[in-house]
Length: 283
Length: 249
Ligand SMILES: Nc1ncnc2c1ncn2[C@@H]1O[C@H](COP(=O)(O)OP(=O)(O)OP(=O)(O)O)[C@@H](O)[C@H]1O
Ligand SMILES: [Mg+2]
Image (tube, each protein chain N blue to C red):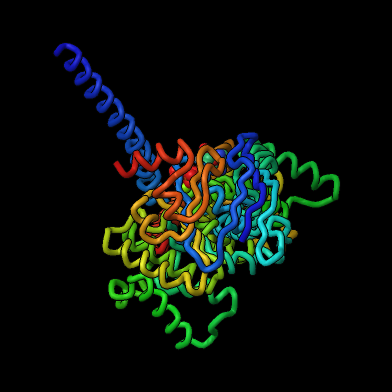
């Protein structure tokens, strides 16, 4: 009787603790979004998102930060495609051509886990060193290279997780019918594609908010980039600059943060939607 | 098909030990034995699916039409696996529609290219496994919506559709009700005219009903093999006797 009672108490206490943790997460999210939306909506204007900074913007506050929005997209979108082109083959090689427990899979997994853990500032510094050696300026291209490197381990990691949802039996079933590895891959691809798209979108969301990677490599500019070799502004770096200037521009920073948050929210929700919409056929 | 001195080790565990069996042509061979004795592993060797098991090492020979299957090159493996169909123990539909599941094998092997021809083939095999009436109007639905037993029959139809010479069925009726089991049993009896069937079953009554030839495996060794009636009614080995008496008492 006594033991049952203490079990019951433990059960209750644990449940309350877990609930509290859940609410903590909710309140984080709510307070971040609340702050950014309230302050951001107060400062944002059409001019800000549709114009590049005026000539003396820091005196007259004219123009906006279209340069940073365009710059961020110009860096991140090509990176996402490049990173997917590298990550998807790696994921398939690790999970299908080699079976999961193979030594090379193990080594690859270790490698991407280490890469995943390396902070983006280190990627940035590394890329910058290489750029100096080859005589390249900070540019859109430099940003793309670093962001691609940053996204590859993220995508491989999620792709690897997603591949675990493919049962060995499914692979065996295709082989038993006489399918080649490539044909089997195509079957498995249907199963993992929605997950991979979601993973790519989430990696995109992470990468677009990363300031450290693009700090040395993409540079900064008040005008729109017109070629890959032009330096460009990016949203996170712009926010960083506005906040850390001797005379800070909190309005601009909040407006840019709002834009960034909205982009990330859209990417996350799109990811959810893809998963929900296209996994019906799957196991 | 003849298995000679087949040994399989997985991560230095001996799973099959010097297995030698000759599977008679156009007959049903039942492989029976306690859980974990290596029945599924044996079947996986017969169509080389074992290649995909990490750490598996094979020795011995599996002769089919004078060719050693274990020495077949990757390029030969494709046709070989088509000819030796394996119906897995755990059915796993491919992530596509019911129709496409059955048609998939034909498509990759370029069989029955015409659209209506393919539709006929799919219908034929779904009828044979007794699934047609249940899925006639939902062929476009994802196969994963089918129940376990329906999936099992679908996997059987899928294997039959590529017209194999051998059918390896690993507990093909384990998730089926008595009536559906009977349909599959009858199908096997009918199919043995054209195919050689090797099936694993835990239902000894079923083995008794349809088997022509029986193999009793125990801890990776062939304990007894021969004419089914002989093995079941009149086992020579103590182990076989014990196993069978457990089942029939
Ligand atoms: N991939 C694997 N890695 C390691 N051991 C394995 C693997 N597959 C099978 N085994 C081992 O091989 C032995 C035989 O397994 P198998 O699946 O062939 O048994 P079975 O006779 O089909 O049993 P059941 O009647 O339960 O299906 C078991 O001891 C199992 O643990
Ligand atoms: Mg088995």
